[in-house]
Every structure is written in structure tokens, then in C-alpha cells.
Length: 373
Image (cartoon, rainbow, N blue to C red):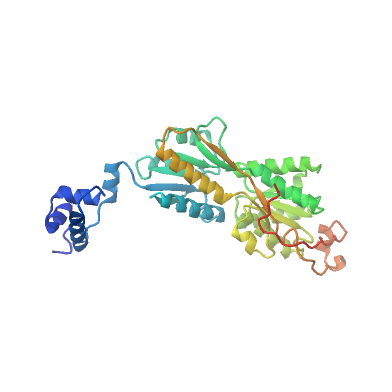
């Protein structure tokens, strides 16, 4: 047979010596005798025939594909979510397809439009910005959708979110317990869902601890990335002298270590540091970073199960799940004592310490994933 001649159901049927209907049944996984299945599969292999997945999905009304839409596929949090969602949906017979949409709602709306044309059976999405138009499109979608993140209370969509406000509270509480009083905050954009929630958590935590609000101790990075963090932390240290910093994610915290150490200061002796998300990067950093665990894997697992439930029962009651945070204590807030820096020989350290060399924190055992709830 010519290599350029297309193999079709007709050719497979002729090679196998069966009817076209029999070939169609085998290719679509419908009941057939063992002998027929063996003959059809052997003929298809010999002819190099591959069933048209698109045609099959249109006929069956299903694609066996689940879509995941995140703002930044390179962010370690989204990578962890992707792996967990893939694990759950693969067990249920679905493939996971990933889309990195950026933070703008318009790009997510475009994705929704395309997916509604039949390219996936369901969608898990984690939007950074939630607008009225995006909410309306989600509600109007024929596609089952689960949102990872906060939604307005009156939106009837399956939803799983982290308690970021409580998470920042854990970070501030821990720093106060370590004797820190000048607690700064490095955030991402406040027009995003996580940015707004984490700022609110920081301000509330200051109030709960009886600490003043200081605009100079708050800075917003252009986005939640390492490069944006370098600029934001530089701006923060140019105008304030904190004894500790809470960062809205671990990438910003790693940037903070870079800027702090470049100025001849030490973490945690001069400036203690807490990140958020508790990614692998926090453990690999030097010093390792104390970080708020917002349950990214739990959120992903819950979202995947909610979507599978919705696919099985489209009329199931809407569920809203909240994953509670914990705190993982590492070296950036509690490390073995290091040789003290002579303030006279290091003006930057003297300034950061408020003209007084800070006491070295009492050494404690490094604790991994210790809940403070």
C-alpha cells in the first residue's frame, strides 16, 4: 500500500475482513467479540490507522479533557497545583491540558469562549483578578467550572480558596513572638484577589498586635515575581528600617534575601523574614525561609474532586471550601547564632538595628510544617 494513501475505516474493515460497523464499534470501545477486536486491532496496526479523536469526541459529546487555567505556569504554586489536579483527573480517565493566561481577565474570557466550543469537558481556573464580566461569563458557561480563589458571596459556582487573611496573621503573630516590632510588608498588586486579601490580613494583624500602621513599611511589587520583588524590596529599605518583613509569596521573599544581604545585613539577625505559599523554593533558599502554607496541594485536590463531582452530577449543590493555613518555621526567623556584626564597622547594620545591635534570637530547632493553628 502506498505510504501516502490514507488509512480509513473502510481499509481497516477490508484488511480485517469485517464490516465497517464492526470496526467503528471496536474503535469507539463498544462491545464486540474478542475475535473481532483482535482482527480489527491487528489490521489497524498494520495500516497505521489512528482514530480521529476530534470526531470521536464530537460524536460522544465528550473530549475526556480537563483544562486548568492559571496566571503564570512558571510559578511554583501553580506547578504544584497542576501536578495534583493531573493526578486526580488522570485516575478518573481524563487528560489535563494547561493554559497560562496571565493576570488579565480578558485573556481568561477568551479561553472560556474557546473551551465552550467543545475543546474540554470541564475547567479549573485560578484567576488573579475577578471582574463582573469574568463572573458573568463563568456563570453563563455551558462548561462545568471550579474556581480556585475568592468569588463574590452571591456567585453560585463551585469554589475553593485559602484563608490568606489568617495566613498573614500567623506570620505577624510569629514575628511578634520573636520580639519583632517594626514589621514591614512586601505585597504584589493590590488590584488582584491575593494582593487585596493579604494586605487586609497584614493591616488586621497589626491592629490585633497593637502595632501602628506605617505607609513607609508597605510596598507593592508590580507582580508576584522575583524580579519585581527586587525593585520593591529595594524601595522598601531605601525609606524604612524594618526589623522583619512579611512577603506575599516565596518568590518575593527570595528577592528580599538578595537585597538584604547585598546591603551587608543578615537574615534573621538584622531582618527576619516570612514568605507565603511554603513552596520548595522556601526550603531550598539560604537561609531557608519561614513560610505560610496556604494548602496549594489541598486546594488543587479539592478543586479537582469538585469538578469531577460536577461532571458526574450537573445538578449537585454548589460547594464552597476554605483551606486553613499553617506556618512552617525555618531559618529566616529562627536560626543558630552567627558571629555578631560590629555596628561601627557596618553602618547599614547599625541603621537597620535602630542604632542598637539586635539581640541574637534564642536558637531553636528547625521545625518543618509545624501547624500553629
